[in-house]
Amino acid sequence: MGVDNVILLEALEWFDESGQELLHRLPEHGSGEIKFGAQLTVRESQAAVLFYKGRAGDAFGPGRHTLKTGNIPIITKILSAPWGMISPLRAEVYFVNLKVFPNLKWGTRDPVAFRDSELGLVRLRAHGVFNIRVVQPVLFINSLAGTMGKYSTKQVEEYLRRVIVSRFNDFLGETLDTLFDLPGQFDEFATVIKERLVKDFSRFGLALDELYITSITPPEEVQTAIDDRSRMSVIKDMDKFVRMKAGMAMEKASESGGEAGAGLGLGMGMMMPGMFAGMPSTGQAAATAGAAEIKCSDCGNMIPADARFCPFCGHQQVVLLRCSNCGKNLTPGARFCSRCGHPTDEKPQNIICSHCKAENLSGATFCNSCGHQL
Image 1 (cartoon, rainbow, N blue to C red):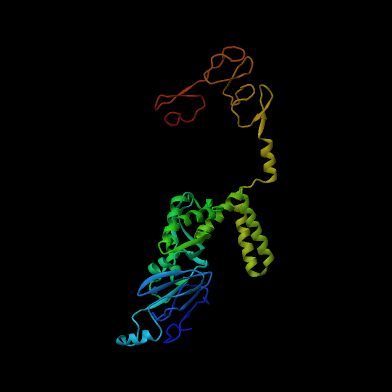
Image 2: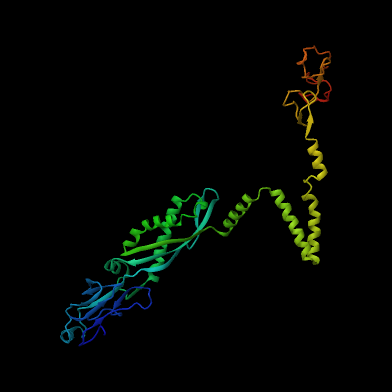
């Protein structure tokens, strides 16, 4: 029934056909003359608040309720003649939807700067969903909806989204050390952020039913750098990898055919000698492997070719002076043989530099003190 009947009583009820309305007022256009004895039907997922003479009266739960106002059928119309047949005893009913409103989106509109311990300063974007519901109907009407005839999730979603992003940015800056720690922590982050948002939602009579983080992503260039880093950790020998890629490119170019393939193949062919110049041939490798060790002339063990002393007997490999009695290599300046004790027969004739008067070993071409030619 209507809400402005002259004689008949009103039967008030409301159905949310859109599924997005948090609040709906009857009558829809301003206030009305809801009469004494009007019937109000409230569903399980609803709550109703009667506003009479501008103030919130009773809040009604599920069921059928009889409303009590000062508007008496016919009599009220007669008594309201001084006010143009409009009763000053205004009344309206606000229906509040108590169901959970799911799948509301939140996310960063602009990337947020974040200092990563491994990647440096990066910009992050985060997205997710959240669910809300009304838990205090009178507070919700007085603090957020006011006198609006309808109030939907679209009207409050943008504001709540900004509040969530603000709390999320603060938490991320305090907690996260590097992007590589993110996997497996979305649920933990969502739980902590949800606790921080309790007061922000409760001041409007709302409750944050659930909060989910679906993604935290850096810009494309940072993602590319992370992918390159993972590839580098897999590749053990970069030199061999580059040569392999070059060979694959040449093979692909030869298969493509045509002038483009011929030109690419010619260019790669010119580059190949320089790329493979550092690789030893089979003969060179065999020669190098064969000359890697020599036999010690004193103990007969195999030792590295570039060794200055035998690691087994200590025999000096660089011959400067040899004992005339036993043939043992002698260190420079030795007066007696370390093996047989025989005095050295020959003493090296040291050369005196004419420029700085420094003493040099025999056979030296340049002074080891000043570099002057001897």
